[in-house]
Image (cartoon, rainbow, N blue to C red):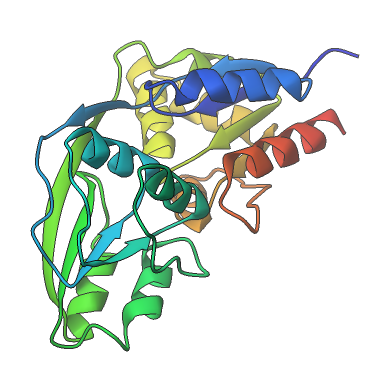
Length: 242
């Protein structure tokens, strides 16, 4: 039996190599397609009562800049973000049960009235969190820690999907879904690429990328309960093998 061919989309900052190695160890043939490159802005969040970080990339950017949360209540979306923050030597105070912007708003809603909240995220972050926290009475600032750019050569997975040669795909953010679609559009194969994905096993690490995929006509087969890449990869590979 041949190994299932599974595309993985992670930023081109070392995580794409780790993801490919994991897929290989699970018995899949990895197709690493780094849909995003990270461009730090050299900005850091202002002093605030609460600081919200949404990715391990953001943690790494701030740690490299020598930033620390000080006396702020440090809030992290997702276990991987919290683990990165703790590895940086910071104390994590809040991790919402639901690993997305709506989950963070629900976690903080009752505590931020009249407080300052600093959001430190990428340039592609949604408006859900700032709007929700402002509705809860918070004074919200937004800092763009890094910009996400799509590499010009990010198209192998779209080509394979269009030819029906992918068995699985693992999307880790809404931006990676958008990057895949943009790559396919640029090649003039978007319709065929989406059709190819719909013959494969498509996994999304959380509801946000899953919803972006569904809106584009992509059927999402796997959304793990825990927003963890290894959990996602295992689920996609196991289903693709069946």
